[in-house]
Length: 355
Image 1 (cartoon, rainbow, N blue to C red):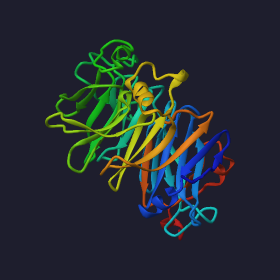
Image 2: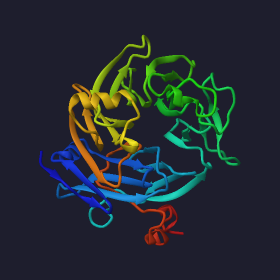
Image 3: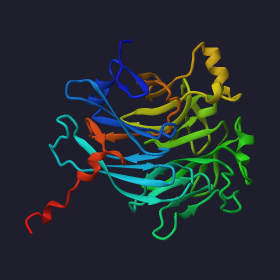
């Protein structure tokens, strides 16, 4: 397949020939993160049809949440809120219809924040992996815990079960994923192969077990749960009532980060650390399929499990973390924390301009 190869510094990107057309057809742009290099990538389509890739630094960038006018980024010890400063019909640099600028940060401390979302009250809800709980920002403290698995006996900075994924439904936390049912420091590591759990937040019931390093649950319109059974190398659909699961697609890498848009799953894949997936079933699956893993963002049609578009990354960058869809956005860019332009990004509410 013919590809375009934009380049951003030490990372080379190759994308499928139809990616730009797909983004325009579905009226969406994408944001994805990597803690490895500490970057937020924004992916869109330029007016001439080429794919635009914009990259800004956020130390240890991990979980993402966003829409057309806001992006929230979890970093090493902060939650950053970026707001679009362009009005309808305005463009930056003659091409970009969204310009995301850092407007606020909440200092959490090093909580190893994984996935996050905006709840119905407008709060940032995040997975506090280090303390094995769901949490929200606090005006006085680093965070306020709002939920923990019932098998976690106390909140401690011990990453006991590697709580990592969060599915929201109607603005309320619905499901979470954990790598293992463990209640001691780093206890989850003994459960990597088959100990993963999908947990109902409201009831504490285990909806699915025997998963391998699960990540990124998402509630589908029919109430089923789409998620990454990462260690098995699969995108799966789970019936939360009976626990039945089916494989939607096999994955060419370690899956972590999942977004939904117009009947498509958008996910991020990573290469193995230290040259090996550490005995996970994913490694055997790729060998049997006669293929090598990739570091990539893939777009999968949920009707048949086919990969319809993709962008692959090579060079020093080998791991991605999260992805979110930005509906209604054609071509986004952002201003990073160290950008010299940040000092001149001054704006105020237009209602006050006549005073």
